[in-house]
Amino acid sequence: MRLLFYGSCRKEPSEEDVNEDRWAFSGSLGTLALCDGASESFDSSVWAQILADKFALNPAVTPEWLADAVAEYASRHDFEAMSWSGQAAYRRGSFSTLLGAQHDPEHGTVEVLAVGDSLAVLADSSAAVSCWPFSEPERFRERPTLFATLAEYNAFVSDGVFWTTRRTCFELGELGAPRLVCVTDALGEWLLRQTQAGGDGLARLLSMSTEKELEDLVLRERQTGRMRIDDSTLIVAAFDKGPEPYAIPDL
Amino acid sequence: MSYEAQISRSSPTAFLFVVDQSGSMSDTMASGKSKAEFVSDALNRTIMDFVIRCRKADGVRDYFDVGVLGYGGKGVSNGFSGALGTTVLNPISAIEQNPVRVEDRKKKMDDGAGGILETSIKFPVWFEPEASGGTPMREALTRAAEELVAWCDAHPASYPPTVLHVTDGESTDGDPEEIATHLTQIRTNDGESLMFNIHVSSLGADPIRFPSSTSGLPDNYAKLLFRMSSQLPEHLIRLAREKGNAVGVESRGFMFNAEAPEIVAFLEIGTQASQLR
Image (cartoon, rainbow over all chains, first blue to last red; front, side, top):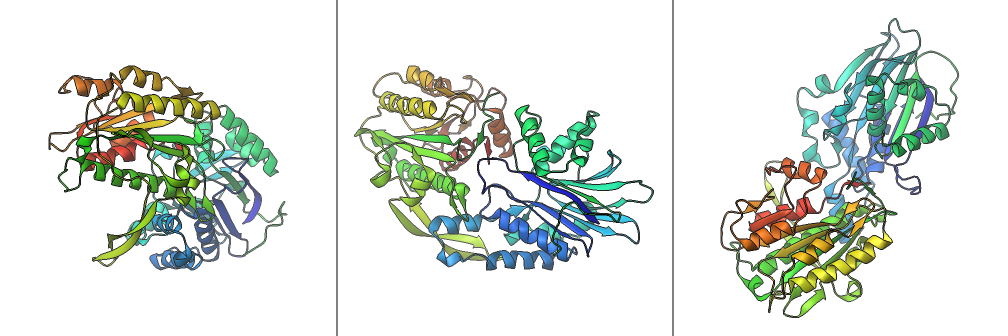
């Protein structure tokens, strides 16, 4: 797997410190993760980055995997040194989606795990082949289950259906030029509406070559009311051997 | 469309609590606390929740301006004191910095192994209970309207302010309806100010939650408070339903005969603005 594009547009362009979307990629392991930290969280960008980094290094998500991530989050904060408001906000927790992909070149597949409402689309020559975890834009109005820094919200990882309900396998098989498109929710909802209406949204995302182009698209669509205002991140990956347009450091 | 403005530091919203502090607020509720004590606890908890929602690892983001007006035997006064007492609406970061005191309280929590753990939590106090004299509701709403005019002028693109009025009795300084009507006409480009009313009771009568008409309301006083209340915007209808309330598109932000649990639930619903970034 190689990355063709990464770009993100903040929810508030004037507030440079506010973007809770995070990602990680490992070319050698063939893993990619995109995490969308929830706005109403104490430190969701750190939580999102921990999850993304951890998945890119080890995509076998288990209760222990998640407990390790929570422990790492805790180790980065000094609870005792916080003011009353910091302690109260910390106790409320941080939340994030995790969209993780792992390429299996031997079988020509991409396994995708989705916790929350970040979206993966398998595309072939600008046509959507499969989507995960949703294919209907209305699903983005639901309240997603997220990974939390509070153990009591993470019990769903231990139930027997965690992997069977949250993962899928994209078959690359006969596709001519398969692309994996990963987006956070506002962009995902817009993309599925575009696809549903026969629009060219997917082709526009696949044609992005600079972050500025993505920002222009997002700001324009927000202005027309067609896209919700939220951090909006796009990652596009390919599965052939070829040059990478960006020097993306491997983990 | 109204009530859709995104809330950010450059475009905050405002919550103004208007709290009855008349003599009858000293009546005791089922919990053993007076109405004034319970309301002040619920209000402090709500303000603490505002702070927590805005508190990030790097500090408090000013998404909200918050104020409290109390009215009773001393007339209408700023419910905040000290550094917060010079203006009615204060940015949430200033509120976080200036509680009157921070109490240590005990809270029972799940210990994660099937047991209960008692832990100490910090409980900041900004607003103290008071109960004396009459009910100058008209004067209080007039003062609230003045605050809202100034705030909306300064924040024309913001999600409009929300007034949460907590009372247990009838106005003693004239009919407040005209002022309430004026208050809800004060607007930003995103819509008219919202006014939600909660009538606090210690009588144990059945509460009436988010009515959509005056039918079923027991008396003229309840009907007056109903008319003084704004219709719930769509996102609050959704939230009220999620919390188990039977609300329709014409439901208003009003509760009558509210006991302790209804007060908490009402403040929880009434203080959710649209989209907090």
